[in-house]
Amino acid sequence: MSARDDGGVGIKQLLALALALSMVAGCAVAQQLEEKSTDRKTFTGARELIIDNITGFIEVTAGTSNTVEVEIEKSLKARSQDRMDLAKKEISLAVKQDGGLVQLVVDGPFRCHCSENSTNFHGGLPYDFAYNFKVRVPRDIYLELKTVNDSHVLVEGTTGDYKISNVNGGIEMREVEGSGSVHTVNGQVKVSFARNPKAATSFKSVNGTLDVTFRGGLKADAKMKTMNGGLYTDFPVTALPVSSVQPERRDGGFVWKSNRMTGVRIGGGGPELSFETLNGNVLIKNREK
Image (cartoon, rainbow, N blue to C red; front, side):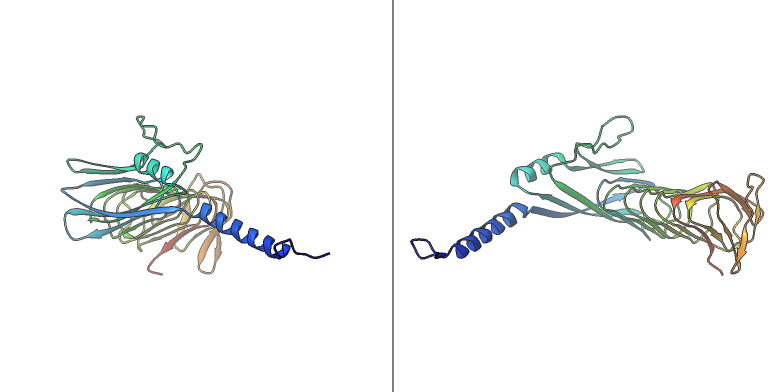
């Protein structure tokens, strides 16, 4: 039997042509529209900065001026023009300055616009969006930074207090001072201090190591907890009364294995430093060793 039709075209060739056309059509359906833009804003007299992001990174560096300089990279992606138009309508950046307080809040249908301005991602969105923030700030500014997805937070060289949070990404702070909280869910927390905290400070993750480096001469009461990991410090310590777990000396440091909060006193005691993770190690390092 001949594998040709009346027009002399082989059946195999027809099948190959149909497959090629379907692949082209599939690529056309999968192709997304994308629009990017960059905006810059400057604020004078700022003493506090809040950035409440959803998707994208936040990078903050201390400068020498008394102004806050922000570069904002915005990206929208959608599979159709209708969806892109909807993204443009629904996604925005709310910018506000009240005296020394500057607020940058990524807004959209995920905000409840209630007293806490919480977010709700149930059901998802028919498009993708991201905001990336690159910021230069006065050294002593207070920082409150939040982001959620596909993100990291980086802070470098600041001396003010802080409240830093992430969900799906890590947090890194380099050569900072001040005290506050550094919390994420899925990611590492890595902090190096140019001057040790003078007030209570907490470091948390669910899935990630806490790697925190202090100056020599640290005086603090440290509380540490991990379920699946180890607790380590190269500072000399004594056990606090609340702790029933004794450390094991190893390679010039102290190591604990515990499913409960372990308390130790460093350098005669001082502000409470809290370290808590579920899956990861707790590392309290002396930068001078």
